[in-house]
Image (cartoon, rainbow, N blue to C red; front, top):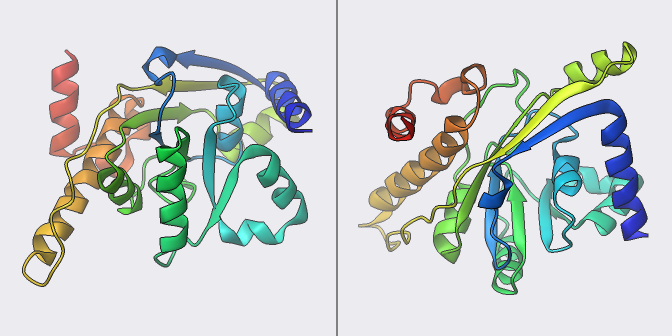
Length: 228
């Protein structure tokens, strides 16, 4: 059943979209790692099953979708992890780290939800915490062309949408500073810096119109300058 579901996803994507993938060699061949991606449309999750025929990729999904029977079914076949986006979920965190320690990878959108504008919105610290706590590398991925309104409009016109998926180079984050009353401010500042770095790494491989609130971030300008 799992192979059939993945085959069906690939078949549907081939019908509705022309997909170009760039720099896929940046994805590690194995071992635990975090794929951090922007999130602009419902089909973003399917993009990873389209490109990577791997059963070691797990995708955290908001727990509200677990109430839908058909999504629960897909989640079983496509390695969804239903998590609470709004409250600390230590059980889910431990499970994610355990999966990576076992050689699996995680596909996560640091923004925590779809961007309604298509451009980057503020990243949440969860992904930075997970990557810094585990020590596993982060692989930035940029998706364009999957906005829901664009996909639906093109389907109505019987046109294929132009979609791209671009993979950046892996990087690691330093350990999180120790907790405690004296170190809380330093810890929070470090997590904010790590989050901004992850988002700017994604922004650096996105077209300018997709960079959103990170378009003028000093870290992004530094990364873009290093690409020249």
